[in-house]
Length: 273
Image 1 (spheres, rainbow, N blue to C red):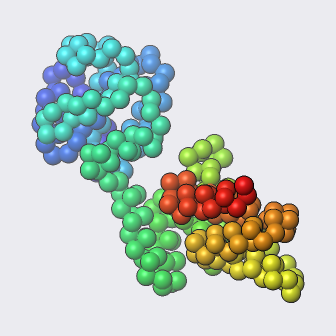
Image 2 (spheres, helix red, strand yellow; image 1 turned 180 degrees about the horizontal axis):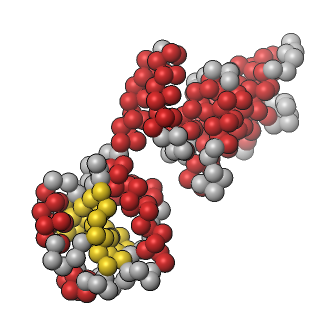
C-alpha cells in the first residue's frame, strides 16, 4: 500500500534513497505558505495509494539544506527517486493526467488501471452476467471514478437501460473537463436511442439511419460510421443533417486519438467539400 510521509535532513537517506530501491519515491518539496503546494498535496496522496508508491514531503523552510542540495528554487518541486538516483520531475501543479503519464514512464500501473484492464478482458468474453458482475465490483471499488462511471453508462446503454446509464453520467462532475467529450457523446447516444423508440417509416434512408443508431448503441462504431457516412453522401437534408451529427457523436465516443476517428473525419470532410 502506498504512503505519504514527512521527511527531513536526518532521515532523508533512509526514508527516500534506501526506500527507492524497493519502490519509486516522489519527493515533494513544499512550503506551508505555498497555495499551489496545498492543491498538489491531495493529488499526490491519492496517487500514492493508487500506484503503491511513497510520497516524501519535504518542508523547505524546515529543511533548507535539502532544498539547497537539490537546487530547489520554487515550490512545489517534485523529484522522482528510483534505485537511489534522484531525477527531475516537475515544478508547479501539473494536471493529474500528466502526472499519471510521468508515472507510466516509470513503468508503474495503478490499481485502477489493472482493474479496468481486467474488466476489459471480461467484457471481451461477451457473457452479460459476467460483465454485469465485474462492473458491479468495479463500482464498489471506485464508486466516484469517472472512468468507471463512463464504462457503466456505456454498458447499460448497450443493454437498452438508458435511464440507468443517465444516472451514472449524472454522477460525473461537469467541471471534470478531461471526460467532457465522452460524457457528451454518451448523452447524445441516449438521444439516438430515443430515436429508435419513435414509429418507424418505410423510408430507405430512415431504415439505414436506424441501423446506424443500433450499431452505435452496440459499440460497433465502424459500421455506424460507414452507415452514417453513406447517408451524408446521399442526402444531408435527411433529419436536418442528422447523419453528420450522428458521426460527430461517434467521434466523441471514440476520442480524437483513435484511428477510426481520424479515418472517418477525413472521409466526412471529403464528402462535405
